[in-house]
Image 1 (cartoon, helix red, strand yellow):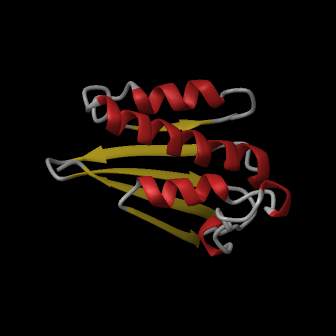
Image 2 (cartoon, rainbow, N blue to C red):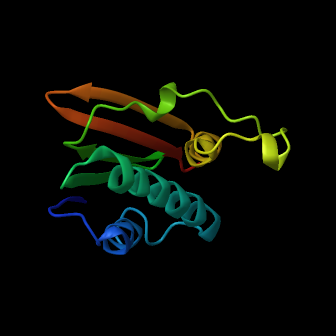
Length: 130
């Protein structure tokens, strides 16, 4: 599946459902779909809230071994993987705001990569299927 959403404002649920209902995802085990949904939602929320992009291009590809989800947007260059990981052992009052969603994605996915190229943020998530 590959789909460009333009504009993206107010379409977060539609974008998430497009990924979750695509042929590469819809028949996966429920535990995998839970992790994928959470991570797709986190990435999409970050794009909507922080990038300033009016569009996002989402592609989903799979083979027997892995699922690959790629997000591209035309927003401000920002590498969410470069932020320090949150201190999950700190008390609630001592914790910094932000970063927990990407931290969870790193834990739930088997690989996450980011690069900025030709005016686009490109974030790729890999999930092993076996």
